[in-house]
Image (cartoon, rainbow, N blue to C red):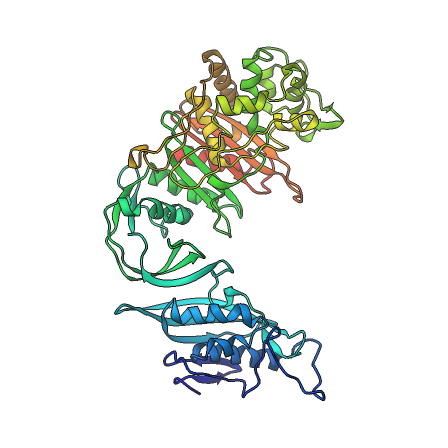
Length: 545
């Protein structure tokens, strides 16, 4: 074995130990190499094996690859132990030359079928700085289609679980200085304490690190191809000096949001201050780390009725005390719509239909608007939705309500169809209803970079705003949101929503509400009725505020 590499077999589990990564040719397959897509030669008499892999073949293939990788084998030859050497070679080579891994110890675990988990304990060295680095990954052994040999099924994640075809590992001086992000009261915000803020803090550093007064350190980072700015720091070899960056977030509200979403496998919540638009919390519980609270695009269900109701009342087509027919079902342009569990309201008012979330009452009024763009215009002109010009301080989606006709327009009235929102959008809509005018959500003050914030062309008419808030108060005290909002004092209002999604057996649960000068919205994937799952999430955040 070269470069001091040793392979120890302990109880059937091998451990690959490398004393130092070398750069010489290194062939642990005794001269037999060749990935499935590489150039290989097979004698005419040699039979190409087929069928399931044996445990011995899995063990040998994994051992060969990991020994070659840890032992410093030439990337070209180590890549030949995979089924895609052309793609594997540059990634394996970059592990040494760009990530600057100088020592590696790889400890495999017992195979689970054809999958072999392993732990890497490495040392990263750059510019006189060194630091240990440890992580876990796994590989899968497959049979080569043309060679029949057991080979590692190539994916960049074999080398590191976060690597993809469009990212790479780089150790260098950081492209931007680190930041010490703090909340509105000066409390430090870290990824460890507030894991939902991971991508947000990365973006804040990328955008404002150079202006926060710090100096860069040396880091191993995960970068997107063609991008010199680190997307995610994996290891800090030498700390830079962090500059302080004040955000609009509130550590107490953020902590409550983090705890609330953890109770569900897929959930997001956002909270804003209606009087200013300042974002107080954004939290997600997702396996993929996606910031769905600010970037998600989903139908918001009946929470959209806040906008629809405002539009109908502005056009004098509805008012809280006016009669509103609420049958079990209604047909519009060939599509049948129904209320949840088929309920109806006899001799009810528009306020009662809003509070109980009666779909049919809203759809029956669509013809009276005589304007296919009415809902789109209300969303844009009053609630600031769909303008595509929000500048929150990090990446965000500001909602979409396209013009629609026929049955699609009817679906939009109840938050289905082509309407797309995230919980920040819905929290902002609720904040606009509470405040009477739109304030674009921000996560860092505008004064930080003098950016231009989005504005709505007009405010809610005073009478419409008062009526809308009264209907939301009714919903929170005696309507569909009453259970979730019980126990909250002060001036409170809410709206529930359930959104059907193709391929899901259960609807997404949506909920939005306000309490005094705080508005919050949440969605829980496959959470059922609006108040069942998302409601308690919002209530927990409002309570913390």
